[in-house]
Amino acid sequence: MSLAITLRHAREDFVLDVDVETPSGVTALFGPSGAGKTTIVQAVAGLLRPDSGRIRIGDDLLQDSATGHWLPPHRRRIGYVFQDGRLFPHMSVAKNLAYGRRMSGAPRDPASEARLLAMLGIDHLLDRAPALLSGGEKQRVAIGRALLSQPRLLLLDEPLAALDAARKEEILPYLEKLRDASGLPILYVSHAVAEVARLATSVVILRQGHVDRSGPVAELLADPALTRALGPREAGAVIEARVLRHHEDGLTELATSAGHLLLPGVGAAPGTGLRIRIPAHEVILALTPPEAISALNILPARIRSLRGGDGPGVMVQLESGADLLLARVTRRSAEALALEPGKNCFAIVKSVAVARDDIGAL
Amino acid sequence: MTLGISPDAWAAVALSLRVSFWAVALSLPVGIAIAWLLARVEFPGKQLVNGIVHLPLILPPVVTGYLLLLTFGRRGPAGAFLHDVFGITLAFNWTGAALAAAIMAFPLMVRAIRLSIEAVDPGLEEAAATLGACRARVFLTITLPLAAPGILAGAILAFAKAMGEFGATITFVSNIPGRTQTLPSAVYAFLQVPGAEGSAIRLVLISIAVAMGALVASEVLARRMARRRTGA
Image (cartoon, rainbow over all chains, first blue to last red; front, side, top):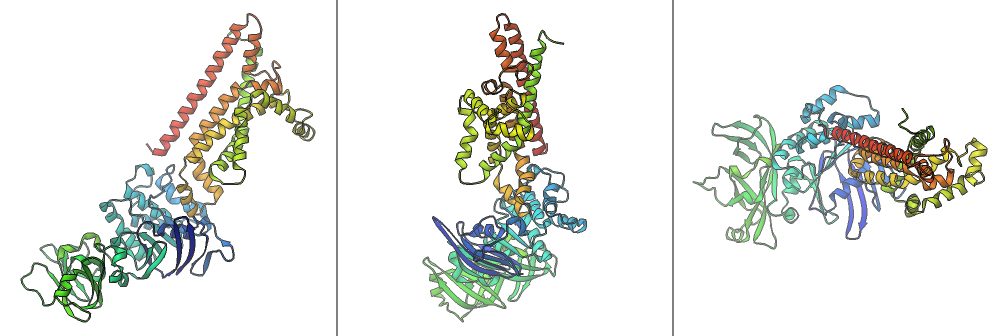
């Protein structure tokens, strides 16, 4: 089910003007703060009335300023998970979860409810008051509450932004499961590349109220032209991999289209499909296969494009098997090695260069 | 048990309690509605409504009472209508005392409730809307329960103010023992009679006891609500 958003909304210091159509799956709205991400999701939810615009989910028109059609928020059936959770403080967790169903009068489905609570790991919290939950628990309850209202679209507005790294790691697997199990279209607002790389199937990059680029996640994140939008330290390609086996020394061997990778122990069973983000600044390029080097991963690759910016760095896009990789090298190195499109080389990746939050379920 | 208090004085205490109870009970829904409008809705003439609500607070009570008499007296436009259509008489009747008390207490009540509604995070109301609650149900299930301690405080404040209302009441319904003589009117009447200071003091003590009782009750209730919220 696709989501088509056309919006124009002007404020004194800010103009939002977007026209996007997203496919089903998880679409990440990505961009720096002030780019208009939250304005868009608020408009989709009906919490903000834009100057003009048209929003459509599948064949259902939510609003159209041309005809004056406007569906109020409570009739949109859109689940909204806010950055700050927004659990109702005067209700227990169970009552928070039941709120959507109570309002819609939908019949109760205890079996699927229990499945969802177990998936989110909140079935033991039902009697608690929201004030007594940890940040991660609150967000999981908020996600459960939104899902139990049986939405046709889920909006996640930086649901992890207020959490520390450990809590994020606690929730990301649930979001991955949700993406894979529910088939519910999700609009995911984030300014963290690692989250986008793990969760999104497609990305819309926003800049100052406009759509900069949009497309499938693997294609966009491997695009050197986006370095400026992402920030050079955040750039990195996403590739797909399958767990082959766990070695005794604590390394996990993975198969990718480019060859085998050895990464520090990945907590997934052999056969599991994963997506891995390889940060561009962690990739070293060599023209000949290096010998006597401590890095364990050496992938044969071919240069597809080079792109320099204002600084001393050059972003190199590589084809390696069926995947695209990004490497960030200095302009000086690029000149010394005479790097140019079509040239064959080797991409070297240290095992420890891939952090735990760079690895997610496929 | 008379505590040395005359039947007329006891009648004044009972009347004051009755007048205050009805004044608060009947004005509370209106007060909540107006407080919500002022706190959450932008509409033309908002400042005017706000001003009218606060008028009894700044007008001399005698003026308010006289305006009530002009409007709700037998020959006043509203008074004649109420009398002819519903057979209700307000002037020189205890129901009129309740009206006067309600109007005099209204600004205090609305102010307390408005503040407590403004303190409710609008984000929670938005969240409720996305979960399928229409505006009325958002109000009933989110705003109202979260503002409950403030509404309670507003009601208690209004009750205390109604118990003490004197100027507008005596102007509008006079000071007829057993009929429109409220507690403050009775204290005033005793003070006009030489040698009745003792009776006046006893009524003053009762008045203080009622006020303290109301405060303590509100404190206990507010604490119970707060405890429920934090789940302790």
